[in-house]
Image (tube, rainbow, N blue to C red; front, top):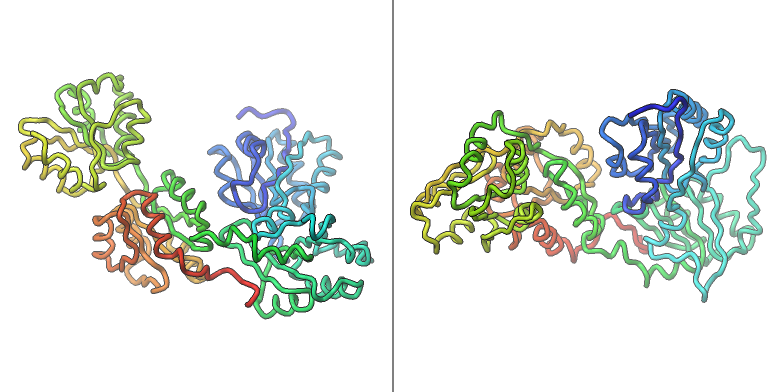
Length: 517
């Protein structure tokens, strides 16, 4: 990317945690950036919007532990901009609401650095909304105030007018856990009723959201008993009582469930989106990586004689992607498939073919190799030539079955699956924190490489369940010594999520703290 003589800084609000709440302008700025300086509360899913050769700098502050002090961050932004870089300064929530964005902008202005402010959805509004707490309500209150739970420690005296605050209908304290006893005392001492409803909300807008409700009389004590830790906000006011009626986010069927996705990184998004929609927390732990074959000779030879084939069979979306990539590389296109019928193992694979503008002629009822064979069993395959483009390592049941039906079958390698290189420590930490409820497997290779990564001595807790797509994957899991708990009737991502809902949907979320805790 071409550098300017002097760069520019975008001070961006990343929103409260839910990656879907980031603004379109923020995404555009991330895509433009040479350097991304991000904070602790910024969702890591947002970093994917930056281009591949961007430089990431973590500047997070967690509790009293600061990776960089504020003045160091200020100087860093100036330094990077003066080096000619476009800098995306990514901050949780909104940068101008208790985000110290004003201090950073002042430093840039003093150094004549060009900057823009990109507002974000503040946690002060979004987190209560996800907890089912409206900050204003015509029948209850028409006033709301946002207050920091942590003032500047260098101040000689607080400038918070507690007497005035105690008369405001709804109060939202950001970063309010550490000083909750002081906050509660000041409000009660200045006339706020001890019976006033209050709620602490931790990790709001994310599947890790935890809520503790009570009143000013007991919320501080209950927070201490529950060891309620930051990051959290405190909401005080009669509107908190509406949560019993209006809670929606933590009522989703998979709310709070940690679901490990073992699919390749680039193919995990579809499943992750389905899980997020149902309230789950997708945990990306790809066990395999999809790569081209060592050489293309087999596939190239088949492409050279496409007109000889009656059928082309795809058993995965990966096969489709690599086949058509190679087709173009050999200076051919979909016109060269004229007269060749297409069979796909399932709807996701079929969609990839249809995206190329090609009609799929055959889709089995059951999305497995045996299902394809059953679909072909009523057809006359004697003397028919079939091209099967698939992974390097796959079962022989399909080509052997087709040959028994009289077909001539050419099996060619379109791609390979290899170990992703992930470290087991990435997942072990989550196991220790009880953040994993279920591990999903979508193919035999995801199972086998998971076992290799975790090592021979690894034992899975009984509380962690296993879900597999299809009987072949389930058989691989059982062979590896894993107990398969969740089965599905439809061998698709949607079917997998439906099976998870069927298993977990009626069970309470273990990470939600209700008012009786």
